[in-house]
Length: 218
Image (cartoon, rainbow, N blue to C red; front, side, top):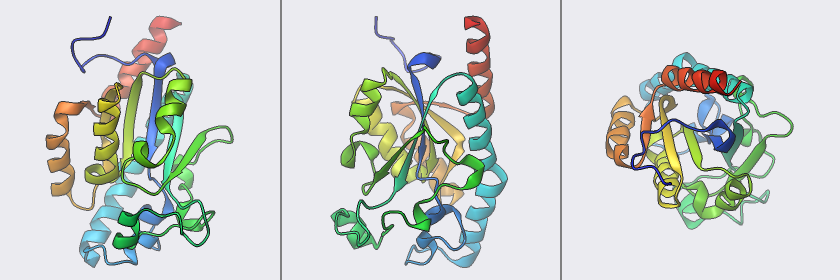
């Protein structure tokens, strides 16, 4: 029977954690996102990077450890072309000046949340991973019904994944302090706007929930 609410606990064996676009391109001071005309001044960039290092990345690391221990599937998306010259990029990425060549340093995930050898890493050239990849096909092959979504940016690629995941029939949980945007205002506004599409919890709340579920099934 389908649930009557989005506010239901996950079932670990049918859940995937999606880390959206946590990569050098947008998390490192030398990343390509900060070299193009992103509209961020130096103080805004520094505040964003400080938030990543002090809160978002540590929370993602803790969440990863908990999910792995509970047997939850971990899937990464990265902004990255399928070609070195980026000829397969979307029109939106071309207009926006977004270019992460295949195999480049910009496409690598930071060590603190790096994928393991057998984790799934899906490159994309669209805001929503469900638009430019076979993500839905992969999730259904894995028997996934619940999605935990985290990463960057809250009001762009994360928000797109939340909304499309919901429309495709997944129960979506957004981890509010394991994602970030280029300003706190943008982050908070996005959370407010997509609340109707997903369940929103903190890292601590979700870790506690997963721990209870793992203990109950032991």
